[in-house]
Length: 300
Length: 300
Image (cartoon, rainbow over all chains, first blue to last red; front, side, top):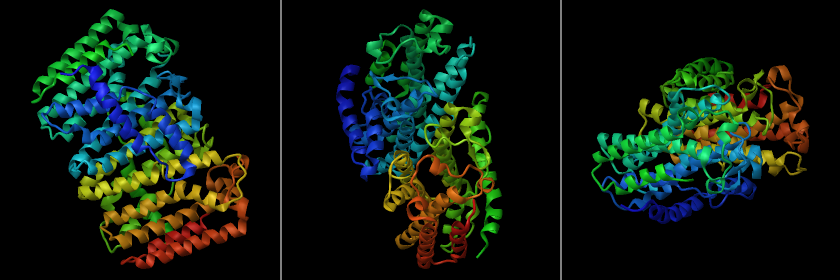
């Protein structure tokens, strides 16, 4: 079992190097601006949670040499960044700051920010195939990864969740199930897919895939509850963006409906269930336990 | 050789049926609005040029039973629609009308229009895999299609072209090569990919793929020159959107640099070269000849 700090210290620089390589050189000078804007947001920091979750899930199957899959797993980070760029747009959440830096559209303009997101999403798919081949994955495995990935981030997943989130603004919502459904689609399905993709790379059987799916979903739900809490009582400097944005947008959240204490309790139950799911995995799941605890305790 | 009118009459309803099936039922009621907005733009008409181009390219290899690939080729139309929705946004081309109907953001709002585009793009990739499997394509063939598709519509293709297009507004451009490079990236690479994907499905050899690539690229370049011409002198009612939008945006175009007559001539040369490329194909290329002529003569 490694501490999450050490896990991040080990993988983040390696993931950053691979991301830099993917976005290295535009094929022509006219594309410099687009590439610059994509790189700006991709390299703006972040915990690289999704690729790391995949790597740890893969390792939990008693597998080794996880590093050769880092280039492929960068696609998860490309897609995550695309979603942040689009979510921050004036017609969506209208945020000026992200990770302590000006959001993409504030620097490159709205039209270019939309294109930067579009470019990253498309690149994510291309990179899964190219890097999958380079890492020696079987064609069928690569296709299964694409199915899992696209389901999680498409209309029945992340895009759907963002659409539900948009519709929820300025509406009176008193039902935790509604919020949970938004969280599930917007965040948890993607984290769940990251975990499952680690399993697919590691040739997991159905039972193991289901365990990873459940683990990812539960930590995803907890992650989003904590996000709601941090938006209410977090430290702006630590989070890197203004707090109380949910209140300002009249958005219902876990703490606004259930209160702070109950929300913390619900997040902790999700984390407990996530850890329970790990018992079905054959390898050392210590890192995944660390990660689950980290998500509950994070302050940014 | 069929007339393009008959080709469209035959394939369009079949493609529409398949598109309707892909977008049929949202998995939950909360996603109705997102699905409605995606359907609105996908079913707003259009010539279904890209899937049809793929089908005819496939047939030119002496292949049969092309209809079973229609569901897969709907992904080209999903991606084309996503690009139209995003291009029409206020921060891009700011268009209110498309195919005679209000643009997506005019009906569903800007945030939702961005999400509808994002959803369609993601769905396009998922559908290639699912429909490819259903049609019995080999895994390697499906992956090759994804590579070809994503290259054509990503940062080094369509998204890049749109970024160059955006940067070209209000700039003095006197160089046809600059406009041609925008056209190539924004339109021609995608049409070229549609043609090559037909070849990949039909197991074309390298020489045949190159012929199809060239054919698609040339008709793509001609298509965009004609687009520039129609924007200048077309009939608003026939085109379904306001003309003179390029002038209003201070956009350099083929006719603005080379004049109308020279632009028509240049388009006609591209079409000639496109038809020449077809001589390397083993089957009946009559339909592809019709299509090339149609692109030159179109009035909408």
